[in-house]
Image (cartoon, rainbow, N blue to C red; front, side):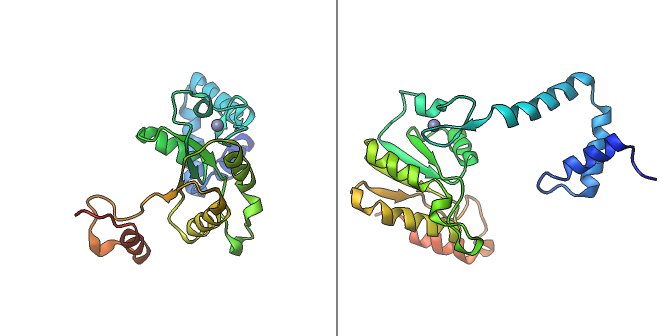
Length: 199
Ligand SMILES: [Zn+2]
């Protein structure tokens, strides 16, 4: 027996989300039928608003509903430190931790020649322009620990080498409480590279 059309559309829609297969999509679609009207209204407005109202900050490229995001507008932040991240999600993670008080620049991707992603495909041009125009005294690169992340960090370091602004990279390594036996070799190598002097 096939599904009524409206339910079929709902299942197909849920399948568009990452990690959602046929079975999960069916389960989600059925649970929609059990939700009350108010929740459904909120959900559908949320979907529409997220798509229609969210745009990118003209300065840092983070997500915002205005032209300039709240972080760029916040004068209490340290405007001399810039943290370069891959995606808006990274900004949100750092903000949740709350210890970083500088500004951000969102690249929206990483350089990956295998996937045909070159420096001009991510927000590096706007980064260079910004660094030339503003007065940063320190740059922190906080990209995903991967071949692409390393390639991108290396490229950024190279093109900014003429600015004489100190550039650092966040340390990657072994998670707290981890069993050394289960750490992959790249993580272990990064941890060695990022070692700190204790005496
Ligand atoms: Zn911004």
